[in-house]
Length: 158
Image (tube, rainbow, N blue to C red):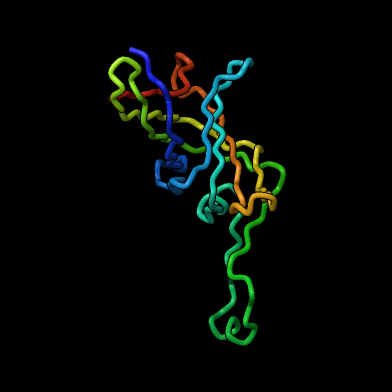
């Protein structure tokens, strides 16, 4: 069978312990590819900025002020996240989407799993005023071997 991919993925990110960090269900684009160096990459462009993801890849600074101090200061910003040039974080990734079988034109659900992934320093928050679209957020992931054979990801097709 041959399949065509005609849909942007829905990507769920888990921490190293397997706990859900967030689900990216507002992606504008997704690209899963094996580069010329033999590295599997997943690059996603999200239409919305996800604060759970930012807190995961950055350092979330807890606010230690009491409610009384907050009331007196009337702070403008409630969350502070610090980033440095090394935002690589180990994680697990599951992506879901739809494939269309070329012979029957039937849609089939598929899922891929990256049991050992790492966020990369490919991080971009951009806005194009020309189109008046919401800003987009780019983030990359690299699949790392998860077993002795060096396997990187598994794909399941309905």
